[in-house]
Length: 380
Ligand SMILES: Cc1cc2nc3c(=O)[nH]c(=O)nc-3n(C[C@H](O)[C@H](O)[C@H](O)COP(=O)(O)OP(=O)(O)OC[C@H]3O[C@@H](n4cnc5c(N)ncnc54)[C@H](O)[C@@H]3O)c2cc1C
Image (tube, rainbow, N blue to C red):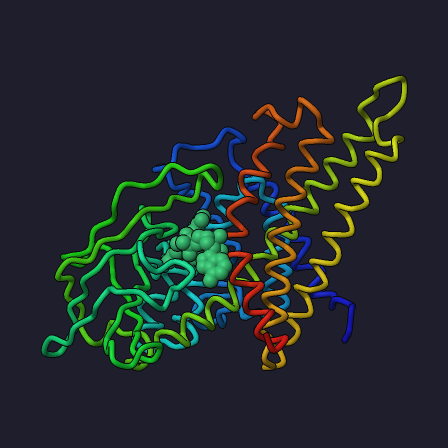
């Protein structure tokens, strides 16, 4: 394994980090939940964040998996609005990426340039009230109707739902085939029978809106199906592998920013006539933060390196996702503790790190589900 970056990768990382810091962070005060940050979304598109691995001919940057994860890291480090960063990741890895990998020419032509430029927002709708971790138990039906399908069902949590122009919806086409009886559909927002529910209030990621989605007699043409009938589950698993790897690059970047900020604070804040960082209780806590960050980062790079070689990386991706998300939550707790009262008040932005980190152990498959995947690779 080569641990070096090429000069192009270094330059791209630096540019992405500087852009994210200068152009994307927005107001420290969280915007209201319905207020999707459209203008900063457009700026994400201008830089290329919304199409990192998509080939240039379709409006992306054509990056490999490892470089995609590294640029997501720059985004997460530079942009303090983790809600926006999460929305970018959900759009890119759970909607744009399956479209690029499985879409036909007409679908790629219609959707990819709009989604990569930031003109449109994409969303992924699979989870249902009775199908969360047991996601393939979903009940939304897609019934053949002449030259199309009629979709009926409801989806529980759709990131970007309130702002999305197109939804990647998973539905059952052949219940008797179980896992191989699911299919994926691209459903545009103005399709009759599709409606988005009221956005949920949540503890963090405040600029990333999330809402339920309802499909009632929602008719789509057969050309809206993404990939062959019955291939929805493998398509979703593949997109989750990308998301669990690359989206979590952004949390590596977030941890690096918070560590830098917390070290600075520990050097400057004086109590008992010396910097608090001179106490081992504080410096060792910072060392533990650093160690968790670096080991999670290496797990991520190895998973992406395997994916770029076309090797089975399911276990390595789960190891990386688990390590990064749990390290991010601990990083939020440690940063608050070291900042003392300053860590708990909203103005410093420190408590927000914890609120934005907590959901990372839930979305893209919970920590328990990642441990189950790893256990099955151990033969358990
Ligand atoms: C911020 C956020 C954004 C999201 N965005 C989207 C989106 O865009 N599209 C979408 O489709 N979904 C989205 N989701 C939904 C997400 O994928 C689910 O929340 C997740 O899969 C868990 O499902 P659940 O919430 O129903 O929890 P449940 O599956 O009900 O789990 C509850 C608890 O039980 C545990 N558990 C369940 N089964 C087992 C088991 N067999 N062994 C041990 N423990 C178990 C879980 O790990 C968890 O701790 C999002 C969720 C969040 C929080």
